[in-house]
Length: 238
Ligand code: ADP
Image (cartoon, rainbow, N blue to C red):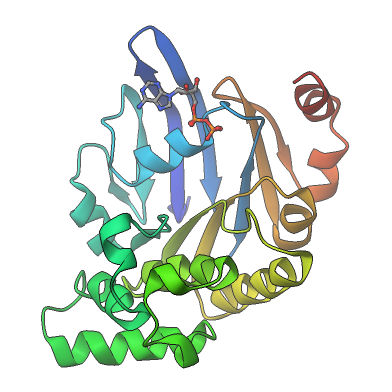
């Protein structure tokens, strides 16, 4: 049997008495766009935080290209090739778009010229090159979302975790976001995406896992998941 690209095995996370993720098993194939959906509070962000090493895992395991991630520090997980989007934080808002992306590129190189070269390449790829000298805080939201993606790409991920990158965008900006995400996948990067906008999820994903109360309730193609009674109930029940 070949090793899955990414695998979660009975992943469980407790916060005190609250079981936020409960025995969650799934795998992601190399090259696919895998959607993780579920109502608010169902555990999606916690799963991303566990993959990124931000919280210790209560039990279960995570494996990426054959390496067990449990208890590795975040920087090691990043070096292995797992990148994720973050909202651009306050201190970084005063830096330019280029500086923001260079900061992220320092995960791969400590040579300034190299990080600048990488950052410019990523900004071009993300359609942000013409905004490189603006401060992050001056960017319209559509571009700020792209900047979050550019920062994650600058760490040179093989697996990219996208967390709500479409929130607050106009339908036109969402369509551009979908095009960018497809382009990222076509460049050879595997993607796990958490997103509330169903139209986006349905048009992008090869497979979708729907969770509620930290547990799997359905998994399959976008069609299968959208029509699954447990999924419909979970969303309507809220
Ligand atoms: P989602 O991303 O699907 O909205 P979350 O992963 O943010 O869900 O949250 C899942 C559950 O875990 C929620 O009940 C939330 O209140 C709880 N939770 C998340 N992070 C923490 C934390 N750091 N400490 C305590 N409880 C948390």
